[in-house]
Image 1: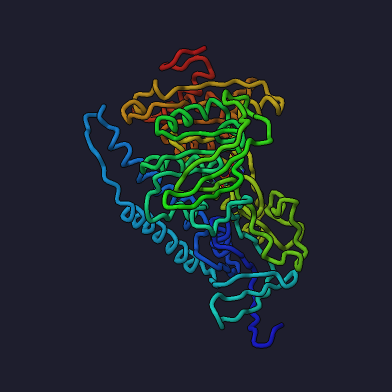
Image 2: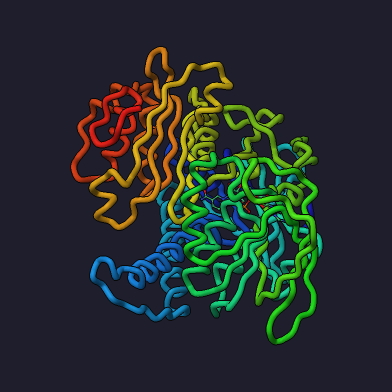
Amino acid sequence: MVVGDVTTGTDVLVIGAGPAGYVAAIRAGQLDLDVTLVEKDAYGGTCLNYGCIPSKALITATDVAHEAATAEEMGIHADPAIDLAGMMDWKDSVVEQLTSGVEKLCKANGVSLLEGTARFADEHTVRVSHSGEGQGSETLEFEHAIVATGSRPIEIPGFDFSDEPVLDSRQALALESVPDSLVVVGAGYIGMELASVFAKLGTDVTVLEMLDSILPGYDDDLKRPVKARAGDLGIEFEFGYTASDWHGRDEDGIRVVAEPAERPAVDGGADAVADESLDLETEAVLVAVGREPVSDSLSLEEAGIETNDRGFIDTDSRARTNVEHVFAVGDVAGEPMLAHKGSAEGKTAAEVIAGDPAALDQQAIPAVVFTDPEIATVGMTEAEAEEAGFETATGTFPFRASGRALTTGCDDGFVKVVADEADGYLLGASIVGPEASELIAELGLAIELGATLEDVAATVHAHPTLSESVMEAAENALGHAIHTLNR
Ligand code: NAD
């Protein structure tokens, strides 16, 4: 112990107050455990402060403007003026409302909040240093620890986030002016979501992607409407390129250099892999090439906690690390790096510590990309189901055949369900189209409950709603959808 230190103790120490950590802390509080939550920055973590919530606020705001500007067909003629400062203020107010709510919920559930940066000193002790000069540090002993330190954007060589024209997603979500042009490196979740935001603000957007298509891992038929809409918004794509450097900063901006990617095409798409380098003029460059775990600053080795070769802390289905009394939840515990997966792991860890027989079932964790239109999936794709040895029955329903979709003016996309041919049990579903992020919940529940195609088809859905498309997709798999041809 360092002279001047205060040593206190807690049953459950949670490190990191993002959606994995604060949910773990609240659940532990509900279970009457003595819990301390240590956070060095802001309650709500990346998701509430710098990621999911601010990006969704800006996606909605720019959608409102774009929809108003393109509603002539509905008899609406508008030319919305964008007040970026006003938009950012509104986004910040949403974030503030949520983060202050998290703090209140933690306190109301008996969680002790501690501001500072925690590092393991041994397997039952952390040292917490408080920020600010002369603020000192304290030592905390714990029975159980839950590591929930999240992830950070990956930096690539040549693109330093501290250089002004180089942006990570957090900086892009807090810009003070709309750039005339933007190069987005990476056509993954973040790249595609923010490319649409900036295109709708009037920025000329070029997306550089080293593979030959957007959103790696998603089926081509899901990506097609997103790629087409991006084209309508004027977003340019350069596939098969790796951003290598930037140079030539002047009042017009910078030039981003990209080299042909060494990786072969994976999706067999129509865009040929490049063979010449690119030099693109742009005002700013957003780098969104993935995220890496925040595990290197915790002195994990002092507690004997192991990481894998990518820095993630491997866990079992009960969120346990290799050290019996230490748990890891959220992004730091590995893919998929999704807030709701982290929250589910957080609840599991708290319940396991309280002695409950909890475990996380990964089979029905949804994933949503908030592109235009949205993509949402849950469970297995058709290919995954076949690979797992199932004979599959599939059904689809296009939104252009949905009365409600037509009345919203958004009728791109479809619902697809995948079931076991033998007994009709739902195995997975995917949706691209309006409100896909909300519609997927019904199918997640259906999979969790072990529902069959007949169960979904026989459930009476309100008319006129987008959710009827879920019922019709199940009916289509059974060969009796009413509003589409059953082939
Ligand atoms: P990502 O892994 O989704 O996509 C990164 C993309 O960058 C890939 O397409 C990859 O091929 C490309 N790439 C990598 N290096 C490159 C290079 N040097 N030049 C050009 N292209 C390159 O990563 P992301 O978009 O940064 O998102 C990070 C994580 O955040 C994801 O794992 C996701 O789970 C999470 N996230 C989720 C949501 C959501 O749930 N809606 C939204 C945003 C982020």
